Length: 231
Length: 249
Ligand code: HEM
Ligand code: FES
Image (cartoon, rainbow over all chains, first blue to last red; front, side, top):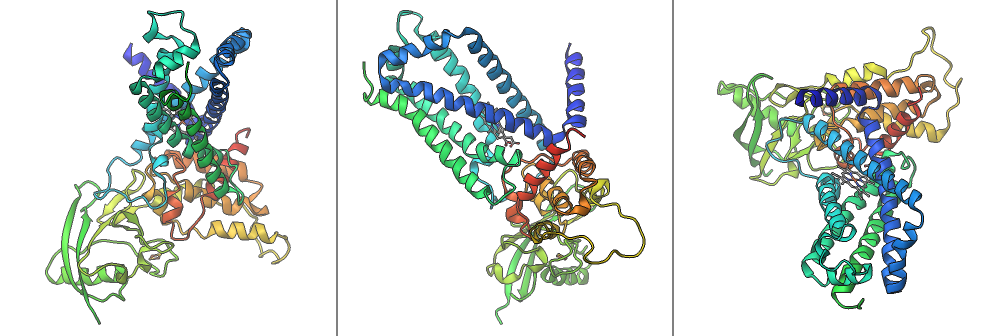
């Protein structure tokens, strides 16, 4: 069984090596990363409706459920891009580790790279952990099986009055910030949109884009915890 | 003149099969006007007089144009001065009494030869895979027979400033050669002479780069910060573009 998996794995790796190479693999990361970023934006727009009150917020999931086919299409696309992104991340990371097995005695001193750019894999792993927790928490509502009649709005209020959940959400959003603040300009570079003088501006834009998205996401649990949004 | 003393910690390795270790050497009476390599010459003279193995390091032009000198100095390839090679780094940039760590480029594609010298022929093989243009032999063409826009010439020239030292690989957390390969592809991609073979060239060079065991680009921009010729990571964007264009080849 294990040898079968290994042989399939090595076949896939050879295929990637001969057809798309490390440059093409990075292009896949950039394209899937861009799709995930689009999702992050759309999801944020949905969440922002919390500020419009209970009725509007509660009607949003119903609105989505009125279009079951597009909803499932979007879900499958999302799962597919997420898995491709992660597989490519792990694939490249493994190759990159092999390209310098014997390390320097003194660690290299970074003079041009950002912290975010050096920790993409780790911020990515925090995002996976968060996504799983988020699904368990608000999609499958596993912590709230005792009261199944809770509407989504009340569920949000009950959850984020809990400081532990709020803190975990904030930490996860900070790693999303790290990931996006580098990811945005990195994807632009990989998709070669930075061949002109705009490179510096794209980097700056990516940083502020990530910053604003993160602040807006964080604002939700914080507003609930601080009772700005209430029952 | 104020002569200075230093403690050197140097990566020593007899050959590629031997284990490496950090050798600590005290050096005295070094002029701040010496370059780092001249300081190593002085150290080597001394090591020879006391019957010890001199430190192997590479150099040729000693004026920053050949790319032979390749030393990671205190954790930064070519040292912390921007836009200079190790041979252009003068001892006045180090405090009196400072400990200076010298290490070779580290990457699986750069095989250790001895001490600070590594085998960089992986770069040559990438060039041989496609980093050239095919022209008919015969007498040289007229100088202005092919008009080239000033901007294109400038961009090609900026990329052609690469001296192939490998500092980009040494500095990259992935030991990626994308800045080098990007420069070599970009210098031809801007010119009409490079056009006919562009797709084949990009494919061949990228495949060879991967075969040599260099890592992928994470766009951390560490390479452009250490590059002694300050080649911009724009050439990596250009490499990506040439690669995307060559896919339907
Ligand atoms: C909502 C989730 C995510 C978004 C929006 C996202 C977005 C992005 C973007 C835009 C990039 C830049 C692509 C490029 O450099 O060309 C990127 C890179 C990267 N992502 Fe994600 N990502 C997400 C989740 C993840 C996850 C779960 C992982 C898992 C480990 C991950 C690992 C990485 C790594 C390692 C890179 C850098 C690749 C490299 O440096 O070579 N990402 N991401
Ligand atoms: S010896 Fe030629 S660049 Fe340093």
